[in-house]
Length: 197
Image (cartoon, rainbow, N blue to C red; front, side, top):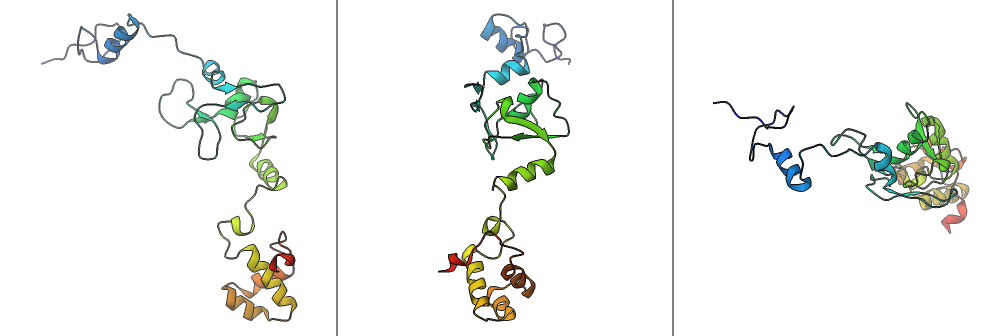
């Protein structure tokens, strides 16, 4: 037994009711026609989700954001799959080629999509920006850290008072080389001994 197809030209979905498939039946109820509604362009969809301020202000993305606060949207012609970051779309719409490059914020505001606050660069450029602006995870904020800033300050004070590296290493559960790097300032440079008091 063959299934009757939707009566709309070039639609091969199965007939459900009124000679139409579910999609065309719902569209008929909603709009009064089975014609495909005009699709919005990427630019139209983008700008309707932006709160534009002055030329020097951050232009905030008002729709969906990812776990880091960056705006996200669906690429043109796709309803599923990975989204694209809104700040990348902003530069693309401004005529900048963003392929194989990262888009960097001069304002350090993830939801900002003002093209005047955005530029392209490499991953290394982006990492250098992060370090220069003090946003890189360091010290106890680093996921690999076994010590806190307070412990590092204590280690420096205790070593300066004459305690041996091997004793400190055993007590804190780290290597002697790590103790040496801490007391010589090779690592944990952002910690001063005044924090131990």
